[in-house]
Image 1 (cartoon, rainbow, N blue to C red):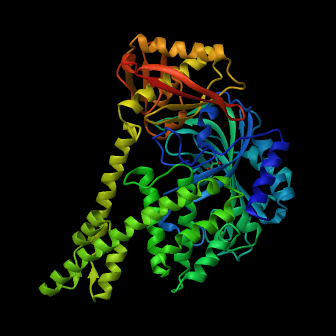
Image 2: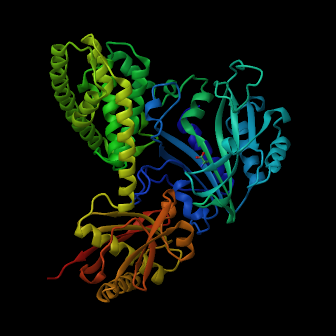
Image 3: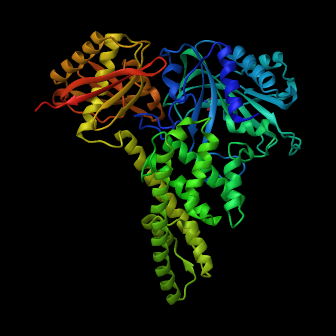
Length: 587
Ligand code: SER
């Protein structure tokens, strides 16, 4: 079964079981500087898992585009991917363990046709925070999973939380037996020898873990599930790796055709990083030296290095992109829509990197000359690091060139320096995330504050069901997406505009306080609750009018922002309205 068929079957199955299909959120969380990329289907749903009402109801399903960057260096083996698609279904205070497990069992065995004997499941063993999950185990047994295919594990395996703090709970995981021989008498699902592959995770989210590590019960019992699409496609197609499925096959074949040196790892790296980069660019990401942009830059540069390893002419990049667009456009129409941008962003980055490599090589040669004169054969870690840090010259290239010159590099010293550098930049990016919007100036800051005023005004005029579902700011305008079932009337638009302008005239002070996420919630602050990924959140208060969780920055007083004018009110997608508005400085 092809990946797209699995996706469609999944969404239809859950639709038939009363779920509303919601669109994938973008890979880049809008105006949320606290996380780099969307990493799980639950991430955009956090406010609703915590009890806010979702406009589409209490049963939801979607496919979510995800990027996980911890694994970049692992890509090239037979399973790691940085970009992947997660299929998910959610109960927001609706059904719980039994119904969730019954649906999963039916989907796996009936819809996907997986024989029961290929399935094993794991449940939470229980500890001082949460009792043993016998309900899940019993339900699996009743559904038809034999007792000796049901395992109990502790928090390390059967507990799910995004990061350190937030909604969480015990989970039950489903494993597929690949049929490979057991690695020993103790081989079981928790073993990573490759016999058992995890295919689906149902989290029973009824707890909240705070910054101190204390668990409290959430307002409602939720279910959050996640099924990795590429992996499922691989298993159902009886393939060894996701690179052998139709998702990667055309690009892998082309790379094999173009390569002059055979290297399967490099082909996988090029194929994977190209797809990830294209998905990130299609969702608005651009290469840079910080944060998200840096991840994208690393992906593109690593891809190029491996194209060099395969000795594929870099001018083939355009052809490779075109192959991916054609192959993936049915799954991701945004790739076709943004094809030209994708080509120009990647090509430009390639050109820069080629220059970097040439520059670095010149510096390297100078170093080599010096060492030769001194009669040395080992390149200092400091030198390797300087080439990397100042010229962007990758250490593995330095190593290769050194070897060609009959020399070696001091990897140990380099690793030490590199680690120190990583620590520093991690701290730096932590600081920055607290600081807020990447691209900030007087205009964008005013628009940012205007967005808060608009959000609150909409809630007053239309009702409290209004929730931000997206926001985008440029120097020229703000764009705000929010949940509301119908078109706004002229009168409503006028009222919202007046209300915002009134607050601007009142010259309200804007203050910011840092507090724990729980305190923020208690204080009645509204906002996208995704900031929970940091330890503390910032709450911005605008006079007596608005209180919202946000990374900032904002103006200090509303007085000088200009006159607020709504230019357009239109539909964005089903149940979501979009407002475009400007601030006009009259003088
Ligand atoms: N949030 C869980 C996961 O990422 C289930 O979707 O595995």
